[in-house]
Image (cartoon, rainbow, N blue to C red; front, side, top):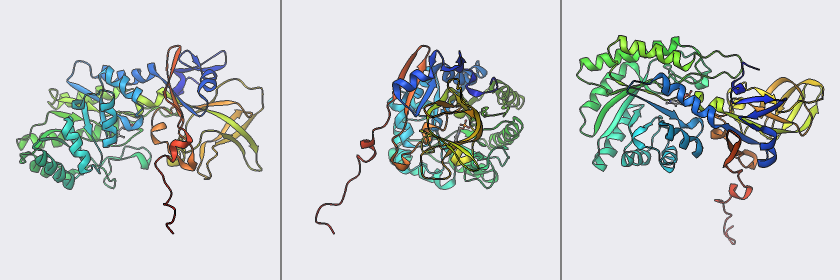
Length: 427
Ligand SMILES: *Cc1c(COP(=O)(O)O)cnc(C)c1O
């Protein structure tokens, strides 16, 4: 079990799985299930891996908050010095709600609306990561209307294969993300000539769950080629943003340690004479992922003709990654069991065949048993939905021996609070 992402903050003592010093059965007892459980120490350790590797540099870690945008997660990271990578006006509102510094916010995404751009300009974010020519034009127009200069960076599509799942690779020619490599210089010239745009940086994000350094370095070299070409055109940049961070270990992946990736990248940056520029990263998964687990209880055990099913109280609406990307996530019994070991598919109550959380796991199970699904701190709760009119799970943050409910379980009435029926008399 030592290879497991939850082994650090989530370890068994006397056979019972704990988060830091709190036994998971106590959390299930107090807050019910399904519940997301986070370790404060693991979250901050995830952030510090980046901050430490960048120590002594002009640098900023912008946590990609779509991975997990709970206010407590944001508050802890903001107080540790983190900036934020946002992809919507809603995410910006969350940063502001915890008193986060807008000047540490980068705004990514291919479909920023005019209202979102205006909102970000009004509070003064660090920069807009521009994904297309039409977007640049809209940002310019909104800035002009508000009498502002919009700080911009162009998201370069370096056309390298990150060797990850196709749904989470973003830096290939056929992805919707970024500006085609050949079109980048013209876009910068266009921006540099505008009175309402200020060129401040350049960025890429080649994909998520990257487990190899090589594609990252290849993309970085291509990015630095652009930086050099722009300098020859008289366009200087203040920062270089290397996008999301490394992948995490769900099963047997061997992602490079954060420090190793950053050292390799910084060596290239320095060798090519750009050591004076500010360095940004936008990691999400590697900060929040290992810090969380989804606690769920077995409701029924069903021995079918071809398969055994353990039907648990968490489902695809709580944790979408398996249904969405066929993601493999570790499943741990929370306490020892006297039952016989069998191969189980762990499934939820939602009426879809894609509602599974894990397949063919050897486990000793009985109704009432608790399971912990590891590596669930990122892209877990933030992707949760209300499908099947299921209220979203509670979230609990553990700090040593204490635990705090940082989001209470949603109430059923809240699900339809904004709905109404047609007035009486309408046909
Ligand atoms: C999702 C995203 C990230 C974070 O990726 P992780 O793999 O979670 O670290 C960073 N930058 C952008 C633009 C993203 O869309």
